[in-house]
Structure formats: structure tokens, C-alpha cells
Amino acid sequence: MAAFPSQLPLLLMVLNIVVISPTNAGYWPPSPGYYPSSRFRSMSFYKGYRNLWGANHQSVDNSGITIWLDSSSGSGFKSVKPFRSGYFGASIKLQPGYTAGVITAFYLSNNEAHPGFHDEVDIEFLGTTFGKPYTLQTNVYIRGSGDGRIIGREMKFHLWFDPTRHFHHYAILWNPKEIIFLVDDVPIRRYPRKSAATFPLRPMWVYGSIWDASSWATEDGKYKADYRYQPFIGKFTNFKASGCTAYAPAWCRPVSASPFRSGGLSGQQYRAMQWVQSHFLVYDYCRDYKRDHSLTPECWR
Image 1 (cartoon, rainbow, N blue to C red):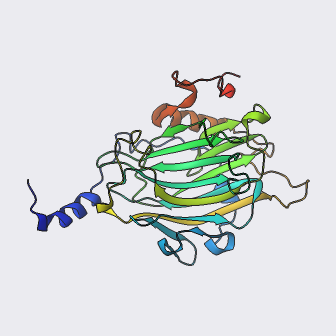
Image 2 (image 1 turned 90 degrees about the vertical axis):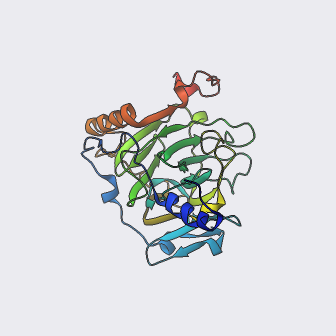
Image 3 (image 1 turned 135 degrees about the vertical axis):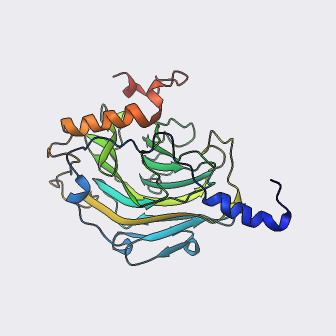
């Protein structure tokens, strides 16, 4: 049905509300048997974070923050303290509808301390078009592999739920042995330390942001941000950041995502992770044969 110009804004509004669930939605992973988020205390936004940029594009309530992107700006925030290990989580709710080109992110980085030679651990939600699910991208950059010539270590997932309907908890567990990415306490990826050259070891801060990444975010840049649907909104609450700060004594014990203080995953957690990867993993850089894996030696060690 053709829309007259006077009807177009209403039509766009209606279309931006309609969301079709991904094909796999409704298949739930087996219980991981252990719930690390319950081990760490929640904090209000200002207890651990401050505005970084786009102050007029964020709104803080007692416990959380809403950030948004429009044609004039996005927004971001940063933890007050740097950490050398820890559990970092937030409950996040994404915007439905057309969000192509838009990145909503929760991540660790030391880019400001080491510009051009930084480390980074990412949870990024890649915006989408009508009827297609969000993609959750996990990534690890080490000592400048995210600067200049990009050497990403991406694993991408669809989710077993609609992330626009309710808040869900997303977390990064980082210690000197491993990085574990979790969704609602279910491990979806474990990145073990195989060498100092392929693992981030310098202190990092915790960040959140929303920004325009039209050049690559959605189907390699095929679909761009469309500001007829602005503002694009990301909501964060239930912040958790617990571990060894950069200023902690040397004897500070790194936290674990499993029942074992030494780290790793339990057998039940590992089976839950395998289930997620067999049903919802949509890209693994180690299985991309177009990549030069001499640059990512952890894939074959």
C-alpha cells in the first residue's frame, strides 16, 4: 500500500515497533548450574561510572542509565576505576525495529591510556533491519590489533530470546587465565590465555556506548543508520564490577566465573556453552578460511 507524505511519519513509527523474533527464539540453553552474577553486588550508575561523551544524550535514574543516538550525537560512559581483572556485567535492553548501522556496546578498554596500541574486550550489539534478529558480537583486541591494521577475534551470536522485550544480563569475566562472555549467566564463549602475545594483560576501564557504525555494523555495511527512526535507545541497569582494580595489592585474588576458585568452567557450564555455540553461533573467526591465521595463532595452538 502506497503511503501519502502526510502518512509517512505514522507508517515509519508503526514499522519501527514491529519486531519478528529470530527463527531459533524459544529454544533455551540447558542450565549452567552456576550463576556468577549472583555472587557480585549490584551498584547504581554513579557508584561506579561517569559520563564520557554525549552528556545531553543520556539520562540517569537511581540505578541505571539510558543513552541514545540521533543525527547529532551518540553517547558513552566509563568506569571510575581501571581494573586488572574482574567480573563486569550490566542488564541491557535494546531498541526494537530498524536499528541498522547502530552499535550498542558494553566493553573493556585501555584506549585512552594506550592510544594506537590498546587492548579491548567487547560485547557489541549490531543493529538490524525489520524482521531480522540482533547479532551479539564478542571480540578481543590485544596491543594495538584494533588500531590501524585491524586483527579482530570475533565470535558472533544470535540470541535465544528477543533482547528488545526485557532486560537481560550480559557480562565479561576477565582474569589472567581467561576471558569468559556470559548471557544471563550462560557462558557463550571462553577465550583462554595461550600466550602473552594473544591475551590482554594491562589494566582496562569498563565502558558503555551507542554510536553510528554504518560502515560495517549491519551485513558488512550494506544497511546504514536511518535517522527517520531516531532516537536509537539503549538502556543499562544492574551494574556489576567486582575484581582487582589497578591499584589493588599484588595479592588480590582474581574472581572466577565457575564454582572453582582457580577458574575455568564446570562440566555443566561447558555443556551449556557448547549448546549455545551449536545453535546460535553465526560466525567464528577461527573458522573463517579467508582470514590470515598466522595473525591469530591461538586458533591452531
